[in-house]
Length: 316
Image 1 (cartoon, rainbow, N blue to C red):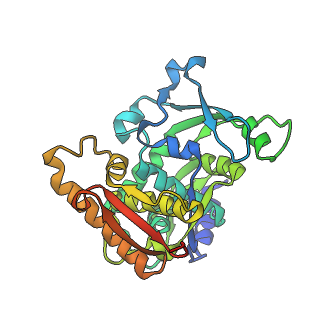
Image 2: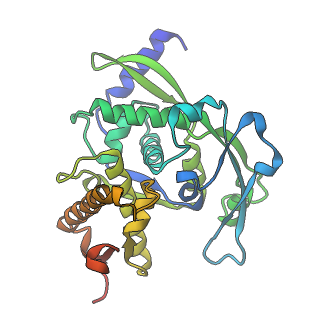
């Protein structure tokens, strides 16, 4: 495609002037296992068959686990040095937003659009350079990590197609990066080359949450990287509580771990942990006001252990 034609296509795409009304959250075992080293990421030059992991997927009604062979690897060892942690819960939130934009029909997108989709913002609300930089770093990482996955067994178990072998080896985010003018400014634009791979896999299992924008946009707290991770964690668990009506306790330590805090007992972390708990309570207060939950309360040792979530239609 000629450069001028590409620029015209970008400008046409950005004339849509709307963003999705809800965020897709991928909630299968593969997506849940990736963050914070749950699945190791190897290097292309040292790969062997022994590196392939047999991920066991549970399905309601299935007599035995579904085996899904997977392998994550970097094309270039320099990626790890440039991006920090291999794959974090924040990267997961960014990837969810990319899947949301793809499903909404966008072929081209920017880091600002991803940030807005993550936080339920409109295209009129500005994105800070710091937020844009964090998203850009995450997008670059997703474009540099490849996933080999054989989900033939999953496809069959979920009756999406019998006797069909499906083996994919692609970037977590297959996209081109280009510079183009949009709205009078020169910006970095990404172009989807294919459906985000984790989203494609999730469509087979159907384990996708849909979160309304009104729950993502919070007035009482700024959407920092940590807050975005906390928000994502809470929403996933509250959705599970609403669906299963089982354990409605959310442990603070689980959220600390999600944020990469290795030793919550270290006194040096005291101020940070307090701020995290305050962020959790502010989010839950807003969601109570919006009637997403009925309320919450802290439990154990003067509130240091976690929160109990009360959903709207639970039995008294």
